[in-house]
Length: 95
Image (cartoon, rainbow, N blue to C red; front, side, top):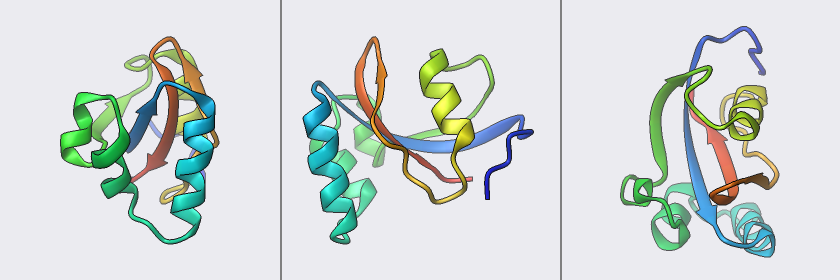
């Protein structure tokens, strides 16, 4: 369920360089692979060591396109590819 009024959320992400990588990762997720393991194996972000977990954050703490996508997700949902100045992300809302 999407909670657009949420002030803080918990999320994880996988950061890669190219959009096609996010599509390959999304396919692996559909086949039942673990988001956390894929983050450990493929993400370029230091959060990869924690399975992509970014912890809890509020509005204004992330770049706008990332924040907009993360806050629009329902708990347990994974975003389509999100482009930021860092690269391409798959974002999973945890809480």
